[in-house]
Image (cartoon, rainbow, N blue to C red; front, side, top):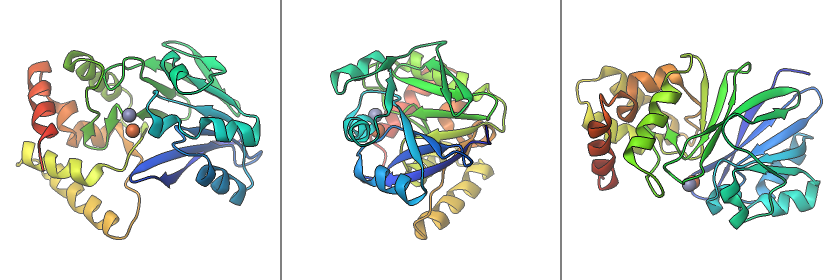
Length: 242
Ligand code: ZN
Ligand code: FE
């Protein structure tokens, strides 16, 4: 087993499909494939073999490529039960289940709120977590099927991981989130520094992810909220912020 590496396939407006690969064998898992073709092309270009798809939640921009990738590769699809409404799932997982990618193990977390069955895949030894649309760099997902209490608990749970854990999010929302964060915490110099960094990267069309637990503790207002009331106030303010 080699060391896993992760790369992004940017698709649709601002989605990222994550390819988790073993560079030695080429064995690869695709996380949250919105669409099939760009993912298959990216895999072919690097001579990767997609053996698995991992979904974090049922939304079509995270599952739309499932069937096309399975048809092309014969891969297995692992997902929360809620994804059965959009695709045939080979293995349904929830809190505490273990998933293996090229010999590296992830534990599944239930992190409901964006959707009621949303999960994360935490690769403890590899120091990385795939959080879908629950946490973004300097932001958090919308509460479509859950409560502020649930989402605040998710923020606290992720933020309690070791500071160097890399967080892989489902969308490139960093710049817009940084602008809101700077509005929410005008005196926070870490946020201002990160706003400048994100603006510079996006100007060149570059990715701003992954983020890290330490970065989110320092700059994510939804993580930094002192209690669920403050979290809920920020979340509703963000819904209409521009
Ligand atoms: Zn979503
Ligand atoms: Fe999404």
